[in-house]
Image (cartoon, rainbow, N blue to C red; front, side):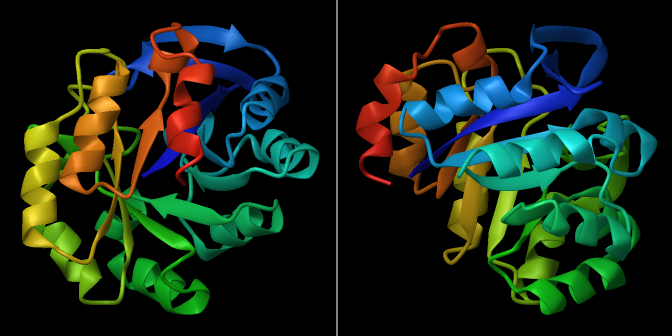
Length: 241
């Protein structure tokens, strides 16, 4: 199971939110590159980057920070936040990312999402399936779509999709454990899926449980920043990636 630390960006700074609420913003470092280099120095090879300004405004905002992250580290970066058009996807890939995550686009413009999947391939495009009260959360988690999340995922798996990152919004930033039941439900329905779990991870036992379920990767955010999990503790997982 891959371990993927997260860097969320607002105004070029490394921040965290709770349940996606921008009013809960806490800044951990004003230099995301510095944080990324710390991860890389600990043996981390993957990084999850979210442009929270972009998610809120509907277009990529912090691309300069993204370019700095890709040019000053060798981390394999997946990026989301504000990717609404083909142009946005080009900006992200031209900035040096390995993968992009699209959530709202997949709900509002499924034809475009399918075209990106065909254009870039299943290893480059990640479906963002963020769950809020059993519905797909969109528009920086402010709204929900009237679509069943199982049907939502199934639609794109039939189009050749491979990767899905799934966050239970109610768990995000709470440090109270991941939504194991949700992930088990998804994995039992779709045997071939590469499921990336995100939200609520607070200790190494949570990682062990996600690995036992069959998750492809786990994204860690606040657990690292609040020193619930140290980078040296992650070494046993990193070595097995």
